[in-house]
Each structure stands twice: as C-alpha cells, then as structure tokens.
Length: 346
Image (tube, rainbow, N blue to C red; front, side):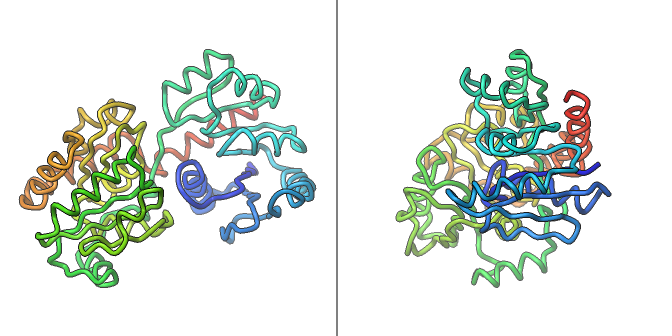
C-alpha cells in the first residue's frame, strides 16, 4: 500500500506531533510506501519517505496545487491529520480515499463541509466524539494518542546524570517539570506560585512551554525556563525530572502525562473531569490532588521525600500504558486497518 500524508507542519504539539510519530513508525516498522507533503519550513526528513514541499501563503499555496496533485497521483489513500482546511486543500486536486484526523469540530457547519468533501474515515482521539460522528452518518473510530516507546522510555542512571549535567543540575537535586502552554487554564500560575514556596528548598522547576504567562518564569532563582521544546527533546526532560506537574483545570487526555509515565516519572495532576479521569484515575496511573498550591506542594513533597511511594507511582503509570496499549507499536495496526477501510468505503 502507498500512503500519502498532507501536513503543512509536523512540528509542535497535538495532532501534528502524533502525525509525525505515525509516519516515523510506518517508515521504520513497515514496508508500505510513503509520500508526505509539508510546508516550506518543516525540517522533516527520512530516507524511506518521499518528501514534497509547498511554499507559504498566499501565492505559494496556489502554486502548490500542482505539487499535491503529482505527489498523490498513485497513492492508495491520503491521510490529512490536522484540520478541515487542509482537507479542503487536498480535495481540490485529489479525489481518492481520504482519512482525516482529529481537529474537525462536530458542529453542523463542519459536518456539512465534511460531507461535501467526501471524507471516507474520521479518526478521533476520544470515543465520545467518534460516536457522535458515527451517529451523523460518518465512518469514524477513535485511537487514543500513543507515544513512541523507543524515544519515550526510562533512561539508565548514567543517561539521567548526563542530562542533568547538560542542564547544569546536580544528580542530588530534586527536579519538578512542567510541560505545556503557559496559561491559567493549564495551571501555569500555580507552578509559578509553587516555585516561590520552594525557593528555600533544594528543588528546581524546569518549565517547557510558551504562552501569555511566560514572564512569570524568566530570571527566577529556582526555575529553568526552556521556552517551547520540540517533542523529540522532551524525553530527556522527563527523565531528568523526579515529578511532572499537570495542574490543568481539565484535560481530555493529557499526552504529557502519558509521555511522563512512559519515561518512569510520576505525574501529579489536578484535573477533575474529561477522558483523562475516566481512563486513568481508577488505575491510579497518576497522583491526583486538589487544584491549589497547597495541594500540589503536599503531593510533590510526598513523592520527593518517599522513594518507595515515588517508585510505586512510577510503576503504576507504566503498567497503565502497557494495559491500555498506548504505544505506537500498539496502535500502528489500527491506523493501517482504518486506511484499508477508507479504501473499501470509497
């Protein structure tokens, strides 16, 4: 089978990162042929992937139509993982089997547009939304976000020490990690307040992210502010940390939590609703606490001061990932089966 992908960007987070992980897995673990069309600034490159680029907006997109047509002329199916507008662009020249990823809102305007674009299969990351699409007459299923287990893994002690040395942190330091948008919704303000409470302790906080609250993290004595960090650089930060904080108001799934658990780093979270709670709370995959600085402080102190508690939490996180099949190796066959179903449906 020859698979086409259209993703203007494969960098950043969310569907773009998941698409990149999927493409890498297909290239490294299967014999399928792959062609990928991206934007001009994307640095993606793989020896088994045929790569095409289109230029930036606006004139570059017009000229890029011919590039897309040539790229997908002999593919069996095209996967557009990000949003409805990229689906529209592809459908302007490609009329074969088409799979779309999450990013299309389940509202009447989007449903109507999806019908016009003749999307053969919609992959969602949440069961509830996939069922909504099915009730609206679409072929749809859900695949939970997965991590690449060859990258998001638990490092050896020597590897962790090398990472900490690169970050100018001692092996004896206690390190807390926050990864995400620097907004109040994600709880960045709580991380900033927690850092103040910990200033007199031997604890440092690594902050990987960007957003409107970024100035709260610059030039702080116990904060190592990294700004936005590419997904491929996150495993080293998870492994350097003793605890990862996810103090969000709510989380639908939280790929940050899964990535951290895959690396063996305990997760402290405050979210009280969403798919994350339904899937992971009964499994005790993460440490839940109230959404306050005091709640975070108590949970962090308990994990940092009690190695047995920390180890047990780490073990439960890894077990949950294995039980739920949240590695890319587990989900690869699901993606391929959907591509075949889209071909049959078309």
